[in-house]
Amino acid sequence: MAVLRDELIGLRSMDDIIKARQLVREWAIFQGLSLVDQTKLVTAASELARNTMIHGGGGEMRLQALNEGLRRGIKVMFIDTGPGIADIELAMKDGYTTKGGLGLGLSGSKRLVNEFEIDSKPGKGTTVCIVRWK
Image 1 (tube, rainbow, N blue to C red):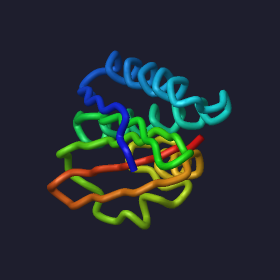
Image 2: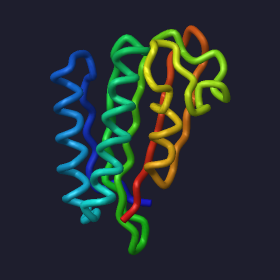
Image 3: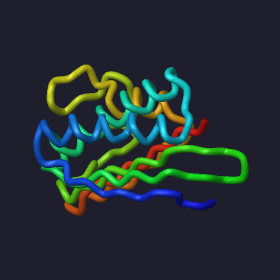
């Protein structure tokens, strides 16, 4: 798999979340994703960027434009060094919330993408990686 483009931005404010959404959409257009796939990816990325800020205390988003044979896609990683998630299985359940939201952030984001990985260690932070293919 070839990485065509790679960019890293900080997620420390609401303005950064807005910038993250715009970048994800621009990259999805660059990769030729349909409007529906663009919307799904931007929605998932927006939610995960918010999680990075709210639950992780801020962090980074890394975007990669992927090329795998004839497939093109976007990989987006969200990295924080916050408190981490003690029970990932519980956190992935619809309706589970720690901050009074709807509890659809992680599970909803997973349903919007083709690939979803989460790695979290209490006291060490969380990394969530999503991929949407054309």
